[in-house]
Length: 312
Image 1 (cartoon, rainbow, N blue to C red):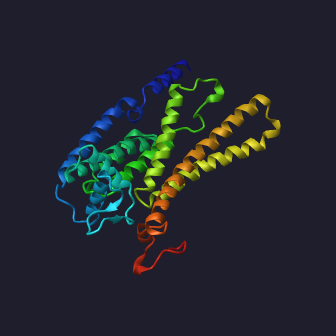
Image 2: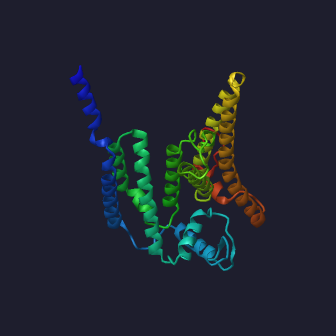
Image 3: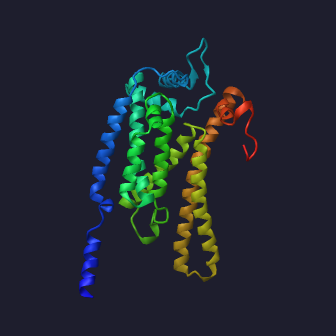
């Protein structure tokens, strides 16, 4: 019996290789080498023939030059109402930092994809509980032809993938139940509290920004709001269900938790609707309507018709 216990203890200490944290840096190094090798192999310095490229570049230049979200490639400079401003804003920031060439902007897109893949490794590892599976899946992503192609042209896909990966990573890794543990007598500016503050700022900012990058970002926004909404509703049900048997001390703790859930959800809700309201207000002022042709294009289906039913 004693020998069996010793064997079990040894087995617990000697974990399988896929679970050891010491190999994670090695996995990341290999992923980096494979990505940069394949990216350099397929990188094309030539201007992509897709027409969206020049629009994104010109809109980014207009923002960088202080002209606002304006068409500057026609005879007259007019407010732009087709593409969302998220990716042009990213280009304008690069230009303000001195990154003006098309080649450099393409390279920046490549780095967006690289950081997305690093985030994806940790997402896959969290979901699968197996670092080898996460490593294999991520390496396959570094060789994905379409991912690599869209990261070498001036399109919003790389930025959208990065923001999506960042949002999913935060949602998976940030334990909202343990966030802001004020009820346990902890000081405000502790390491844990700072981590929670950074998480809520990054999450709310990413949810607002991804709305401006691609229309389909709304699906991810709604998914996040639904997820945290379910957590809030479940907590409220449990709170009112056991309200009559809760002690005074326990009531204060549960009330603090309830307020925490409500505040966090309201911050996320406001971040999205503030972004949507500001964009709609701008379009109403410029065009007399809140919708854009980009959204209308998104709703189109074959034959020139529009998606109207759940079947569509």
